[in-house]
Length: 313
Ligand SMILES: [Zn+2]
Image (cartoon, rainbow, N blue to C red):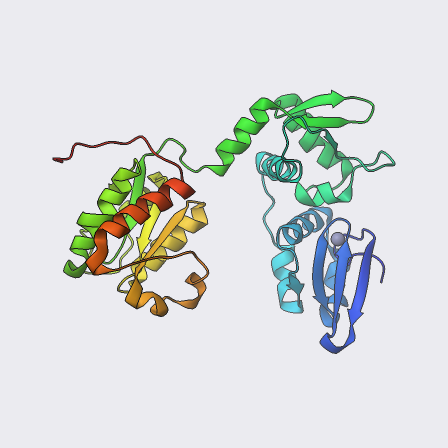
């Protein structure tokens, strides 16, 4: 096997005998694994161009994925992104790869052909499909790329392209609202009123806590709507409420930053998957410290906001 079983581009395929799987390094899909059984499936030989484009694009975004036979259907039925979505993926990729203003890059290899890598990045079928994304859409129509050198097809990201990339990275760039997800228990009232709320205000944001649903872990439309309207969310896991986990997960899924809090003595109870996040531990008898740390954490990760309120309100 010297071709990628998904996209048929040239690839190095190394059999790992003990694990019964191949390591694939494909010029288009990147690095992934495929089990010996899955690699023999006829399904792969009957993929159409759209399925290949989607599977290859997905694998590029999820490197070191292991394809086993039960995952084949998933790869075959991936939804096709819209043209603007494909263009966003490609623009974000080049901005990370070449993060210098004025840097000139090309989508072609030395022989003047489009690099298969960029088919995968933009979830494109082939070279002409890919060229449509960077030339017709990003360069000609949106002007997010500025043409630099015609013979070598060198491009630069244009100033409006950089501005757009910046916008893409921010969700709700104009929102001043910080959604607070926490256990609505009297034990935490002081932590909210003396530290969490003022800490958010000190950083220049407007805290929003919906506490009329305290008796149940119900997530209703209003909570969803308010999270969507927020610039970030502050989640306090003290009390281990299901609602707090849900709201933090929902915010992460939207791409909103999450500030993670938990009372120090409860830190070890945090469900495993959440431990990878950088929690701000706090103590009941030192709320001024929480207030200050929270303000700094918000300013460091989100930036200072410009919301102010009267002390009396
Ligand atoms: Zn491939």
